[in-house]
Length: 565
Image (cartoon, rainbow, N blue to C red; front, top):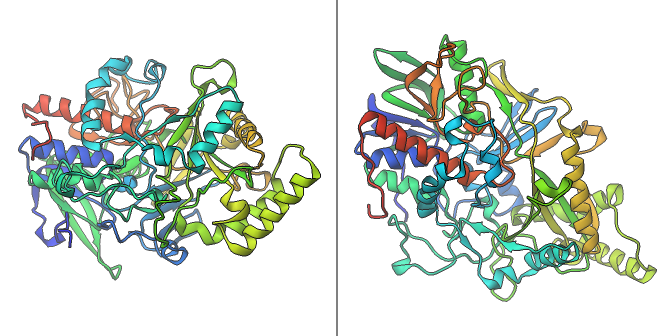
């Protein structure tokens, strides 16, 4: 039995040195680092605490773990693991639970290209790559990114991406992922948490049930607890108010039956780390309650240039469907969700701003895949010319897949693709009826998404498959898109005319002189002012590490770094 990280809500004190709202990368880092500075830290998380072994591994389990928000209605528990936001132009999926989106992402830990940080989208203090080097190192020392072993890199999906890359004159390279692949001394990691090697189930994005993925509940959060931080879950924050040199946090707790109870807690320092959507929503609500802020709150939303596609029914055995409730087979490993990428950044032409990664679809979705892929292939699939014999063979595999399920035939031979590029970060978030909405007319028509789709089609052709683009990106949906990497809304900038926080994460008052609200910070993906062109978790972490370091410096606190608790 694993000891819980969180405390009962009735143990919450009325005042702390630091109150952190949100428990993903930003909130986990802030709680750990400032607790290490000897401060009394309270962390508030809206979701539940979930430990490995409790994540969904079936279709029914997935349905029970989804909350859905659209302009018309909400459905599902407010603490459900998968928080799906539907909007006319863009849909967003984020994690809800102790550990935030780290629970449901692929855990890909790569740094952005140097030219990304050199643009004037960033405050001047951050426009050189070297500024973040030490903070990337701090984050990497806790999150432990590593390359998958050969047994996974030579498995179906990574090998197929490598074969396609070679045909296109490129090379697939291993991805650093936040997954433990090696036995640890006494099965205990660097912060004293029990952890085991990856079994290759392919289910990283529905929650690792094998204690192998380096989510925030495996490092920063237990480290925060080791240093006396107090963690509370099912705590939904509404807004903040400044009073007598402190910040008051107003919210409600939600019990297992859905009953709500109001709470209030105060802190000398409050750190918003509720994610791109959550922190923006809270600041928008603060403004409605009279807090003076930059007019840029809610602006500069980015999808991080995300696109997905599928190389359906290829000539390769991909084995890219996660196992769900099935037992891992060492002879036929899937590997982590993602293990390899092809990097076009720096190349000439339209491809020169793109990174392509292979992925496994989680086993909890397996039962839905064969009929979905078959239908989409008939409706929109495109495949290269081939002999009639090959066509008959592929049609046979497709029928076999529909009859026998996703672990054979056409679905077994399907490679899932994730492409990261850029957009113009011009989405807009606002509150309507006290609920966050995102508007971005024409987003799906931007040329980079068409170029990304064409690149994935070339990769599919190299594998002899039918290309299926993102099923929701079509004329019937006005080219609606989806992202799991939302950025922006409280972006960093040199002044409040361009952003919401300064380079330290301090919140601007909105006055032209660049004044800040003492003690109020934002540390999460909402501060990132531009698409990064890579998975953003490591950049978010480095920025949070830097903000904590500068906060401690300003207050005369000393953070004790190092692995020993």
